[in-house]
Image (tube, rainbow, N blue to C red; front, side, top):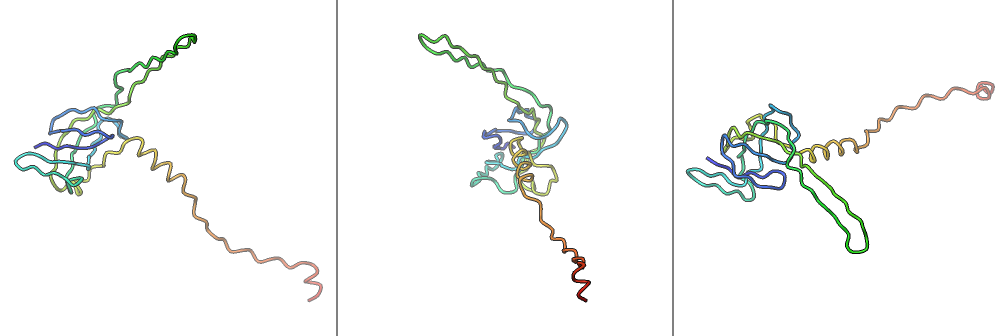
Length: 152
């Protein structure tokens, strides 16, 4: 049985036992994560989602957090300008081993859903941006002034 899952803006065709390099997930080595955005399930019968297959999931175990191959971007201005610049980048990736492909019942599996680091930062930022609830404290009764006591 195989599945086509979507994560990090890319699609992967996986089956049990496959090792994947995906965009960085908010998990540590040894964690189990579940992908719920399944576009297609294949095997004896093929199920294509519209846009996703309801109740389907892929369970994977995080092997490690790694960095991708370094890419070099060289920028050079033309002619009379002697300006050059070299930029490098190494993408952060998560190494996964697929353990199970679930055609149904993924909602009740109890495995934490796979969340990318950008989504985790967005949730944390939105939680911090929510203003704290305002609790009204009843006002203290005012003390009697000397003038008010003198008139009584």
